[in-house]
Image (cartoon, rainbow, N blue to C red; front, side, top):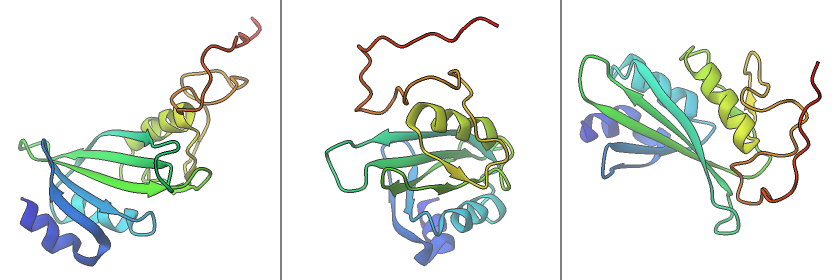
Length: 152
């Protein structure tokens, strides 16, 4: 599977390697949509299972990894795609390729504050609009008292 991915993705990836649990493709945000289209249309990864992020606050120049997981429904094959972005940098939405990414991108926006450019309805999904900050960021100070929303 890894050689097939390397062959199809080619120069669009900065790195392709066999991870502990699945092949991993590292690419740039500029090539993200092309890589995902190849994985879906040419390699048959037809289901998105998750989108998340990793906050590397203070440990490297580009603060976040945005991580996508895909699966072939008819087989056990899975693949991970990663991009690195700086704080405040927008990521292209993949909702046009996978409708199931809609709520997953909203969750990453809500928890990490990462914006997805071109998303049809990018707003908080787990927390209320007035919530101060994004709780999965390493610099979120969870010991502060968070005001609750007013009852309507």
